[in-house]
Image 1: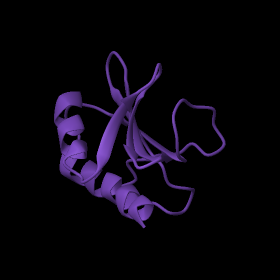
Image 2: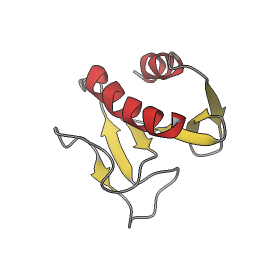
Image 3: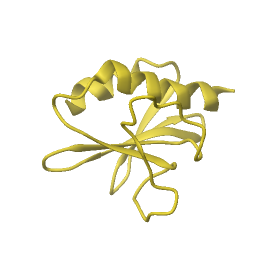
Image 4: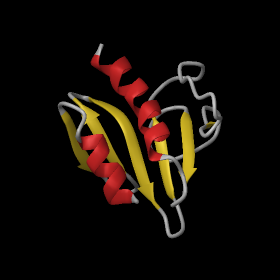
Length: 101
């Protein structure tokens, strides 16, 4: 699941994968668009948008603006093997488009 999501994220133009101790960031120039935290039973995905900027009609992501967490952004989701990667990529693309300007 991680490899498929990683490959799909890297298909977006000009993104660079930057692993750090706690997570793997995907940067566009100097801004992290999204990051992935690999856990034993799930994959945590965070999107670098401020509260209120993400259009998530299915409610997959939760607001972590006031919660301590590794990584970036105000949105986090725990992804399992049965989750819709197409929908997830549509949300990641929102962050990509925001940061590309």
